[in-house]
Image (cartoon, rainbow, N blue to C red; front, side, top):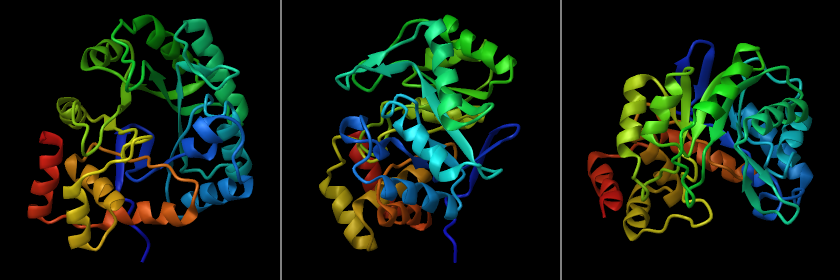
Length: 288
């Protein structure tokens, strides 16, 4: 029986995403920089994701840079009709691998064209404006930057727009310019600072896509999570992903991996039932 992938989300006309997607960031080399250790394995995991029914792949041209987008193109082009590739702009990489926030409107336009070229697309399904990171939040007005992307949307180069590392105020500001279909922020079982924003997205028909759903570079560690997972006969990672799907119908997942086996383990989390007592215990992790 095929995995359910948690069903689908339809945040806007013409945009449907499987709730379990795939985050391609880990396909680049160490620190998301340079080529993958095993190019064939990277190609294989992308094809396995699509074969499993995933229609939501998350990427960015600054992964590598360009490396991950070129891998996606090599593995999947010509793309399946229902595949939606979601990318980000707002950063570039230094020659030393450093991450540099770049929010100049002219450069944002150039980044969109970089994504189009490296992915081999005429139009991008979704472009998220990356406004900061988990350790360097950006709280400045976003009208100029989001407006530049809205112009490209009007030109047909972008179909839908989203935000990443955004505040509630920035979401409101962006919505006054163009529809916002996705919010991609740091959120997981232990990092619950966006609880109110998650609920707002559900109310407004916006997909909330947690990045670092398993903790990212600092993997989730919790005795409670380990105990619940053992009781359910699942891995802690599967339980953490299942909790996110239970948390809100607006949540779509993009866990990343460079392993086909690990990919299928993540997908199986969508079919993991969490009893009420398990949910109560897991909810306590974030409250603590």
